[in-house]
Amino acid sequence: MTISRLMCTRLLPLAAVVLCSFPVYAQSLLNETQTLATQGNAHAQFDLAIHYEQGNGVPRNINDAIDWFTKAADQGDARSQYNLGVLAQNGNGMPKNLGVAAKWYLQAAKAGNADAQFSLGVLYLEGMGVMQNNQQAAHWFSLSAAQGHIRAEYNLGYMYENGLGVNQSNTLSAKWYLKAAQDGDAGAQNNLAYYYEQGIGIKQDLAQAAQWYLSAAKQGNVSAQYNIGVMYAEGLGLKANNLQSVFWLQQAATAGNANAQYRLGRMYTDGRGVAQNQATALSWYLKAARQGDAKAQYNLGIMYYNGLGVTQDYQQAANWYTKAAQQGHAQAQASLAGLYLNGLGVLQSNQLAYVWYDLSVESGNAGAIANKDSLVQQMTPNELTQAKQLSTRYFAQYQ
Image (cartoon, rainbow, N blue to C red; front, side, top):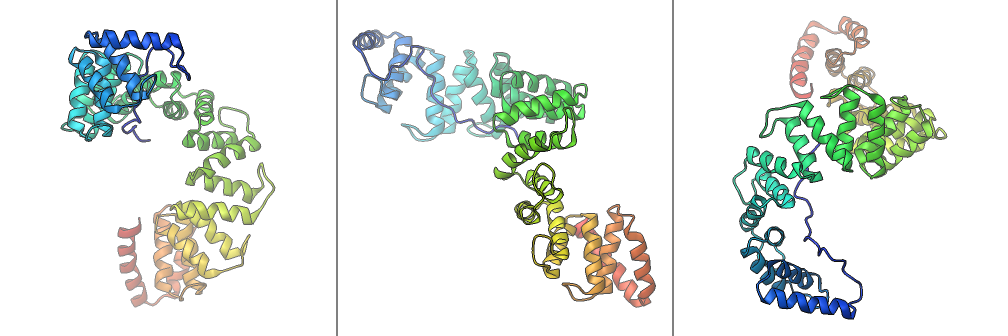
């Protein structure tokens, strides 16, 4: 899970409804706003700045918008101070300057503006425009979250989860993820679901986990789509449903989630929720494998070794077994050892066969012990000594 970065901030809108057309009565209100703004009314100055920023009833002019925001901000209008911070942060109508943005956010934050408090917290978290300071970030997130700012609630949950600027507390992390989740934040819903699934900071409840994963998935959260797909496949917290599992795994896999791509490949391999199709399974394994998923790489090795959904190719089998083995995948290590032992797709080498059997055993594959012992009986003392030395080097590199 990753904390939110600088949000795509937009200017605060006018309280009044902005009409697509600009009728006479709206023009009258604009005229009154211009009069009051000219007379020094800060609220009118803010409203007029919004008109210029959005081009409502007047030609769009960011410079005029900045001028009126500044007049209102100088009178302590927190909304204008916040908007000037946004403009400085994004370099809109003025040079991009995070130090200036932080100055305006600070003024607005001190006046209680929740958006400014959140944005200032992000700047402190990232060390942008200010010295990086997790304590200050947590402070401003706390003030913003107390006002119901959803992204601040989420970030505060993350800060407590990881002990950033606050004492680490899974309980408080769960509390803030819950608030953000209830307010509709998909990332918080996914994180809260994981807490319920694992019993982190909250009593384990698989039904609650499934509910929150589903809520996040429906909002397009890719991790949640994968997670609810797994819940449906395994019948965790809800009734097992292969069709629903495939549906959600497909959503996440199409979005590029490697775990989902692997799991979807498994569904096609096993014919669960879809017609069994080895070629389609292979295509999903390939997508996941290219992203470095060791399980998918191992399964690709199996498919190339056995000619499932593809022409049998021992060299390709060795290629994918190697990629998985180098990530510590125990079964791939044993399979690769077998290829070296028999010279399939690679040059025959008892030493490398020993190395990969040895690493497989160290990875927890008890089934490789007998193969390793059998191989040792075939090796000369010199071969075995060299193989053990090579295994030590490989262990340091790949385990």
